[in-house]
Image 1 (cartoon, rainbow, N blue to C red):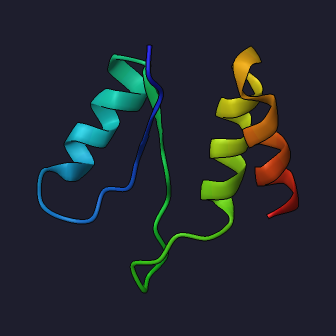
Image 2 (cartoon, one colour):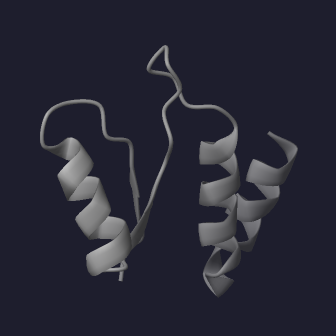
Length: 66
């Protein structure tokens, strides 16, 4: 399984993001603020995904210090 990080911005992307997170349970939806930007939430989500994968120790340590 490849985890998906979805950032819905337009018309049907919100529905697709809901399916990815709530129905299929293969990813996480990132919340967008009123300016259409995402915050540090993306860094946290990606970091957690890499922590769940044993073979990505170097990448997870990079994300910690980035």
